[in-house]
Length: 251
Image (cartoon, rainbow, N blue to C red):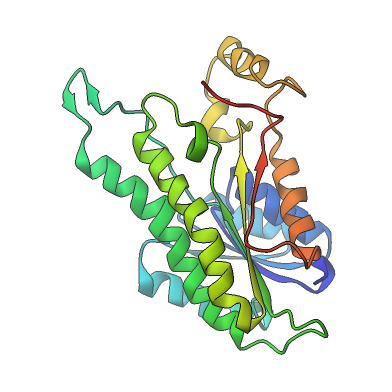
């Protein structure tokens, strides 16, 4: 599958890893539709890359169905889905105010894990209708986990659980969709310079970067984007999770 002939939807495409991915795909000739809740920045990014935007709640079935219908109307088909929408709370299991709020845990699972599955399953239906390429390929789904799935820190019970779920569903989903010519891959980023980290003081960012063995810096969203593009074009990658973390193993 070539980027130049790709029709992609990117969740969380208004900022961070999703925005970088949308820009990279568009720069390489792909048609791109952004799915995001940010109705201010989303249309701006879409206009910048010559793509499309639709306000979407990834946890809502009807919202995602409408987004997929819109994307197909605008692009003709969907051949690539990249799930970057997500949230992160820093809350310990028992904190100063008592136990971890259950609604915060549930919301994290709903957006990060259930939302990714919701988009993936509905996009897969659309992909399965595509005419196969000569090698049988009809589509690629790329989900976003995190090294927290393996090395979760204090205060990351909800986040690590949500990302661990994404890791766990990668292989069975790839096996489920093999007959349809749809590959499923997951990227597990380390510490990246995204809006989530940009608000931290410079000395805190420097401290986080120093923990990365090599190169000793924060990841650049463009590196995630380039890996996503490589996965699209490398047809033998399937059912695997790739850590993108500079050999960081968090303690």
